[in-house]
Length: 157
Image (cartoon, rainbow, N blue to C red; front, side, top):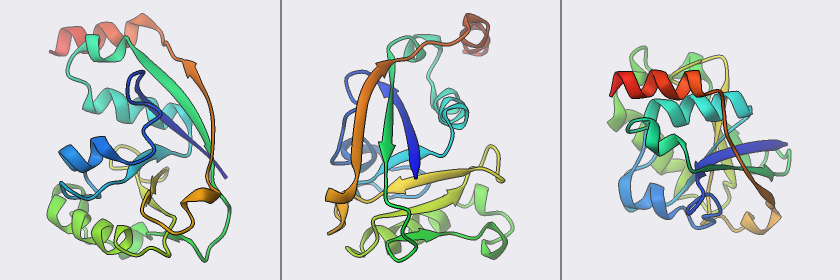
């Protein structure tokens, strides 16, 4: 399975989940490392835009293509139909779910619905998994997009 990570060039190759550990996220609490990726480049971009702090944070980004094993025994799929109705608004709930999975060394990754497009998936990688060495990190590629999108960020800041 191929997944994509879009991040600032300085941090895109983080293989220890340092950023997520420092700041937390929808599926992890502070002090719990993980690496957020998406099943599509376009979803990775939307996720990056949603978290951007103005257009400047979108100007120095890179794309990393990552290959993970397609193995249901080490990749857990969170079923959107089994989540609470208001899961997108309850960060404690989603962090609790993520914490259960990230604290299991047998879980290499887990797929979750995107809060932006619930029919698409983000894939959370567990750098503490005993199977983490089965992940293949590709080359880092400079990423740019249509400046109309960046201008929307500029005007919304």
